Amino acid sequence: MVWERQQGRGGQGAWRNEGRSREGAVRMVRRSQRRKLQKFTGLCRREEGLRVKRSCPSCGPEPGGEEKKGRGNPISVQVFPPELVEHIISFLPVRDVVALGQTCHYFHEVCDAEGVWRRICRRLSPRLREQGSGVRPWKRAAILNYTKGLYFQAFGGRRRCLSKSVAPLLAHGYRRFLPTKDHVFILDYAGTLFFLKNALVSSTLGQIQWKRACRYVVLCRGAKDFASDPRCDTVYRKYLYVLATREQPGVVGTTGSRACDCVEVYLQSSGQRVFKMTFHHSMSFKQIVLVGQETQRALLLLTEEGKIYSLVVNETQLDQPRSYTVQLALRKVSRCLPHLRVACMASNQSSTLYITDQGGVYFEVHTPGVYRDLFGTLQAFDPLDQQMPLALSLPAKILFCALGYNHLGLVDEFGRIFMQGNNRYGQLGTGDKMDRGEPTQVHYLQRPITLWCGLNHSLVLSQGSDFSKELLGCGCGAGGRLPGWPKGSASFVKLHVKVPLCACSLCSTRECLYMLSSHDIEHHPTYRDLPASRVVGTPEPSLGAGASQDAGGAAQACEEYLSQIHSCPTLQDRMEKMKEIVGWMPLMAAQKDFFWEALDMLQRAAAGVGPGLPTPES
Image (tube, rainbow, N blue to C red):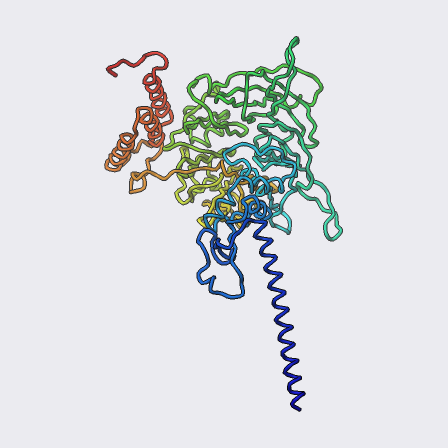
């Protein structure tokens, strides 16, 4: 019995020795692996780091980590080569990369590096050869291609949900889009115009169904802008006018070619080019809009210098195989007001709106009915001079606008929305159905992302404090054009539409609501804060009614303006600040133009440019 007990104790000891030998072997393997890792990455035992899952790389070692046993020495992420960390992070989704960059200062710098976004961009768009332009070209290109998308919701049918169109692999973000009768056209940031076709496809249940924008082809390259019939009904959009740049052969006896702007006309149904007009290489355009009837279609072209040129085309003769010469003439707004520099245009069938680089607004109205709807009177309408521009009286600089058939919307630099025109269906959103012959502010809406005006309803895309977006609408709700409000509304109400997170523009037709998603980190409306005089109880002036501001509030605002001018160090800075203050003041557009032109003359004289050189006394 004693021998057996000793044998049992000896066996237990052998088992303990065997277990110790196994633990020792495991330690030796771990030690060798650790030495290989230290040799490969250049680590040393003196470096104290952190455990990645427990603390920030820039905050030092984990408290109490050295006292814990059985976990080995902690390793810091900061000791790894930056190229290795960037390579690992580039495999994360874009949403996770942005979230990781918000955890700490170290990861913010790593996730914001151009190397990470270059790898992400090449993974999202393998065929993208150039990164584009801007301060952060690779990050901008990656986010553009990650957020691009065209969404639509049909008004009719049983299934009323948001759907997504096909995404062209060659597209470098989405800049703008235009739906026509049968298809949708999309222009990307690389100047490629895509033709998204509707087609019959088989559903998951084996049935054949009609689907919107499910196939795509490249219509043309080198496009700058495009336009079609400005009416809201897509039935009239038969032709597509594309402003593009093309290489033209040089003059006889010279080598090489020149880049010239041209306008190409395509059939929207098939994408076939039916007409082309080329301009002189010295003229460079950036925007095209259409106005007028089919037989007298006027093409308005905006140059890089802010001048407007126009030419007239008969659309009923475009499909005939013949060539003819059209005359390009300077528009009256540029002839009568040569000092104005137009920044952008908007048009409908019978009117055109111009926004200058200083935020002024000028109008052309070509029919008496639309003029009466917009201004409430025919007193200043001249049927013999329909191109004469009319200045709108506005309290601040205008950033962008939307033009419907007989009403319009304007958004100023402070994010305020002004509506004007016919209000028969409540499409102005003022809470009533009274027409407005002058810009009227919608007080309960501010800082919109975009604004759209249709035939008899209006839409506003806004963003909440939590960056969620919602779609608001007012006016006629017939045909489902205001989802959730079939009877319409005289005020802007929230529509029953799920808005994409990065939606930036919208368009509504008779059959469908379209929303374009594309986030550009360098181009977004930057609104200013209202001056203290307008926030602290100074009533807003009644536009066109001749009402004056409160005396105390106006005096306080002038004192604030003078203090801002006094704080400028140089004379040139004071001149620029004075121009900015003139834009803030509730003056008429003609008065603002006068002050801006006078300040420009004084600024040029102070700099010694042009006539009237400054004297030593001045």
